[in-house]
Length: 134
Image 1: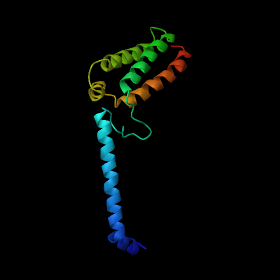
Image 2: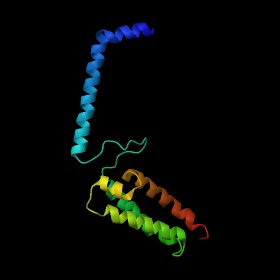
Image 3: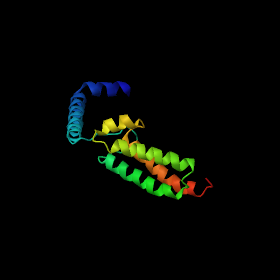
C-alpha cells in the first residue's frame, strides 16, 4: 500500500536510496566534466539525435556533397539556386575559426546535429527533384 511504501522511504531504504541518488549524480557530473573538458556537449536534448563530436566536419562534408549532387538540376531552376545559396552560406559559417556554439548561433537553424539531419534530407530530395520538370 501507499502507507507501507511511505514508511519504507522513511526507514533504512531512504538511506540507501539517498546514497544511490548521490552516487548517480556524482557520476553524471563527472562524465559531463570529462565531456565538457573535451569540448563536447553531453546531449542535444533531442530524442534520437546523438551528439556528433565532429559536427562541423560532418556538416562540411554533407554540404559539399549537396553542392556536387545538385548539379543534376538545371542551373536556372529556383530549387537549385536556393539549395546552392543555402549550402554556400552554411559552408562559409562552418569554415570560420569559431566555436560550435557560435556557428549554431550564426546559422540560426538549430544545433549542428539538426543541420546535419537537414542536409541528409536535402541529399535524399535532390534525386526526386531531378526527376521532375523544373
